[in-house]
Length: 258
Ligand code: 13P
Image 1 (cartoon, rainbow, N blue to C red):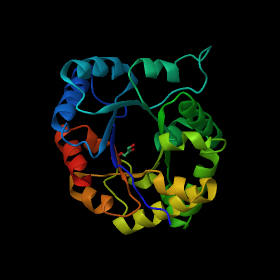
Image 2: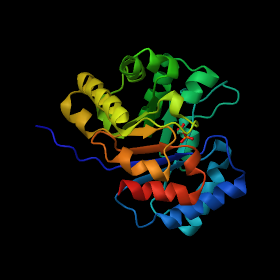
Image 3: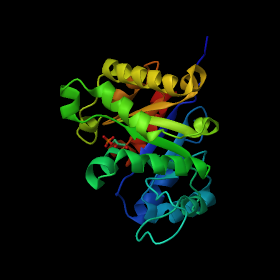
Image 4: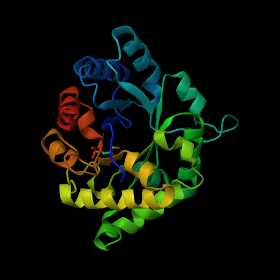
């Protein structure tokens, strides 16, 4: 019988928002406001252009346990990849975390499953914690394909991932129709999707790794709906977009997981 012992995570994906001054100020307020919250891992994902400033600013005032991540990298270590940044570069900037497969990378930029897989593997090989994002579109949901889409994205995204990297792998279920729309999956619907995700992880890696792995929910998580979502047995925290851009709401969401 496997038992769950998962430390929750609340992560803020700042996307392409905030100027440098605003990013530094937000990071500092989050760090000072959450320093007592050791039982939840707190990670912020500023825009790449601000990682350096945020990192040095937090080093000055104290991180309060807040960790830093990058929203995207390229999977090759170096070379002629104009406009891209490598995993070693973001590690140099103090990042321990990386997002892959975010819906905006898949659906706006056009990243396919094989590129998501290459980025996921490269991030893990570089020693980073990787949050692999998956989720269905509205059309797919209405066609009853939620679990099938999640399973396909998981199987493709995780192909070739070595077992010894699994402790650094986190999954984020973010239904595309819930991102930035104010529409959230009901706690029951989210729990059902998360449970199915964990079953796929079990089929891929076995029961204990699937039990140990954190699966986050993302998509219009706000202070007023976070506690109900996080109370579900297979939801281990959240990946927060809009509500992570204000310290008060991000901290309230962190509080909701405790
Ligand atoms: P919102 O919280 O703004 O819906 O964004 C979710 C998201 O995409 C986090 O990665």
